[in-house]
Image 1 (cartoon, each protein chain N blue to C red):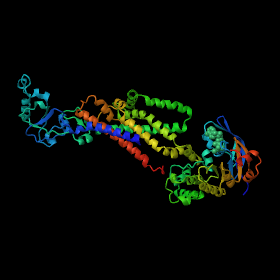
Image 2 (image 1 turned 30 degrees about the vertical axis):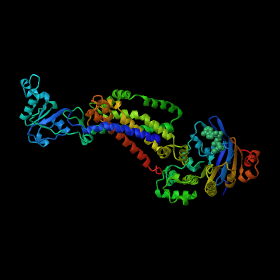
Image 3 (image 1 turned 180 degrees about the vertical axis):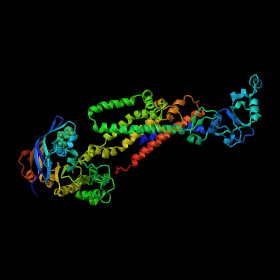
Image 4 (image 1 turned 180 degrees about the horizontal axis):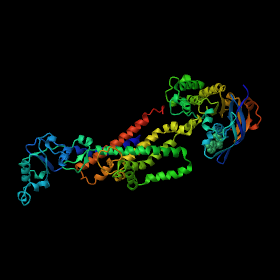
Length: 385
Length: 253
Ligand SMILES: Nc1ncnc2c1ncn2[C@@H]1O[C@H](COP(=O)(O)OP(=O)(O)O)[C@@H](O)[C@H]1O
Ligand SMILES: [Mg+2]
């Protein structure tokens, strides 16, 4: 009880700090820090979400009417486009007239949207600034695009990462659980000492291999195999990730499940056999139900390993942050995202905060899974098993 | 009823690895009798009992010589279905060992593993078995309760009922009352007396009075050997061997 309490407090503290670091995200401006987005004075559109901004600057939205404005083609303006509108003389010897030029260009083009540093904002600016807004929780939790380097507004939608994580992990556990249970049952119930003496060290060895090595193995063996078998353009897919994770989760599942099967009292086993049950009936109807809580623990630990695993997944899943529609598409998981991007994210910046919040999400997911498994184990009426 | 041999051991020797646990045991048991095995602990009573339903098959490195016939059939012959044998030869263990299931499911278990699906049949057999084990009155309102909620004595009678449900012809009991209080013990003894009309019972006990009360014949084991086997009355009143005399009068063991 005491150690459980200490563990809980520690975990809560960790989550608290993660969360404190991450929650700042929702107080940060949606548009890149130090920049502004401006439109012509006549333009009625004032409010643009990060996704809309990205679509506008990617020319996916070409007319203001699509954004609720007048029927006017959109003209995108970035600072380095300035030479197309004004001459070098107008900009001045030391480029000191940039603010005035910007103001003039925007005033002349009714359909223009401009993105430039706020230091070039002249006091008598002739255009209108798009409303400053903060990143909203809705955009974070429900956004379906993760694109932290997008300009003018980075996109922090976690849906593709969460679905990627869930796809990979659930598929991994789906592969690993039946195989792991089969091996555990075999080792605990059927194998003789000789076989066990060979199997046990092999399984322990599997558990001890660093995940980078699994990653290389996946890259060299699994990825090309998947590419060939399914005839895909690239083999780096969710499937490759889940196969690797399944292999990595196997030792945990086998060891924990085997222990719990072994812990079933001999007397209960004998009771079943003495009633004329076959060995298989005894395993299925008495031994497995009796060890159900241990098996649940194996599942939780296995999923935990799978969901939190970083390196191997990073190496074989293709890392594309789009919502996957199947196992044969590249995905990107939460841990892989954090590992890959934390180094590039400026300390304390928006991106940095977003990654911390991702960490919180990962924690919440694992917590939910553990609680569900616990409830399934406890809720299963002991007498009916 | 005719005196009909149902169990016949012929020159049985048994080893746990190198340990010679049973030495040249031969004895016949008759149908619808209660046979008690007595002897100091470690003398091989349980070992011999567990040979009768091939429970020792589970022990690594065990070896048997000699023959054991049940209803005329050599149970160690090649091709014998062990699970079929165990349905004919039920067993009750020293410690109550109900399954972590409901009372009902404990009894139904033996039927279910036999492929019985008919609900009504299972229900009637459960009731019958619980009545047979003198437990029905106490549990009929809580069949859906976990078996672990019963007292130790009730659990043991549940285990007896569970064994009865598959309708064996022989019931092996390994010190079934040793973990129970006197009242539960006397209930089990009464039960044994009643069950004898339908079943052949072999009971291991280290309680001399119990052997004397419940059994028709008694076998005295000592250091893996069968010292004396006779009518219970004869064993207790007028044994042939001095060793038997010493044991039942409590001079050793
Ligand atoms: N599974 C086993 N492996 C090895 N030796 C055993 C095993 N079971 C019992 N024995 C030994 O066989 C002897 C007889 O045991 P047992 O039949 O249990 O005696 P009893 O039931 O008369 O007390 C004892 O010496 C015991 O230590
Ligand atoms: Mg014994």
